[in-house]
Amino acid sequence: MNLDHIEAFVFVIHYGSFNKAAEALFLSQPSVSARIQSLERELDCELFDRSGKKIFLTEKGELFLPYAQQILQSFRVSKQLLQHPTALPPELRVGSTSLASGYLMPNLLRAFAEQHPEVRVKLTTGPSDEILAKVLNKELDFGFVRNLAHPGIQSERIYEDPIRLYVPAGHRFLDAASLSLEDVASEPLVNFECDSLDWLRVHRLFDRLASPPDFAYQVDHVEAAKRLIVQGAGIGFLPELSVRHESEAGRIFAVPLAELAGIALQTHLISLVGENGAFAKTLRELGRIGSQSHSA
DNA sequence: CACGGCTATGTTTTAAATCA
DNA sequence: TGATTTAAAACATAGCCGTG
Image 1 (tube, rainbow, N blue to C red):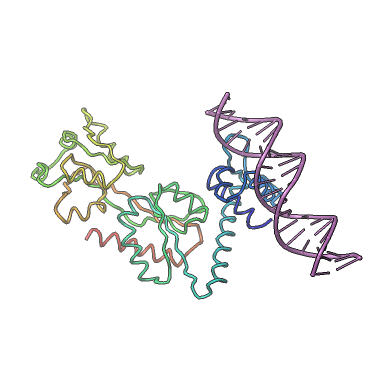
Image 2: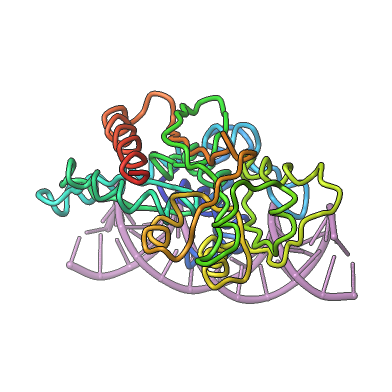
């Protein structure tokens, strides 16, 4: 068994097929098969379930994966150490959801860099599930994701971003004394889609209305939703952090809606249990401070 | 030092199985 | 049926090592 075997194993999982892994490794498919078989012989167990058209990891394969990642990572780091003994920048690999990457990470990572100038930071954006999987596989050290639970993962709420109703400048709601859900449903809505449970609560608000609201736009990109609202295409619900600049510049306004009280997007910091304690502390503190300075 | 055998690992080709 | 994967056969290449 050698590193090539382990590399082949990791590549096959990453690309989801023997063929694609072979292509990526500049090898033929039989060679990849041979490497995997060699590894399976050495470990004395099946790593892949090859019964179907798609391949899956067996239970033991799942167990082996994080160690395989670790072995490759260790080798890369040690090789770097031998070749460039002076320059060994520790790397912090952070994953986060698209919203957090756009509006929380820039400030947080810069503040982190001030405290740890020697650490290089790598930010990866993706859905919460994907980030979780990468943290479990040791492809990432930390994740900023929506609330989720998993054995082997420690999770802590970092901050809450209240969801508010936003309208463009000059909108009639700005003069209204108080708003009802019926008022909101009578306006064209820019509906920002988000796979968060908190977001579902916003949509539930309209369930009990007699006439459904007019979702003029369904948008899965928060910047697009924001600009539609700024341009007067409609009104919509957005997380506060995402419209901070436009709000300060007077291009978009939050209007109070009693039903939204307590509805907020939660961002949690996750990491493997018992790992990266020192960095976790800093990130946790920065996350708190970051969220406070935003609302100020 | 040159040679040949052994071994590991690679490629191509071919065949067979499985699934949508 | 077509796409995909596993597996095996036949051959090439490179490194190691003992021998003359």
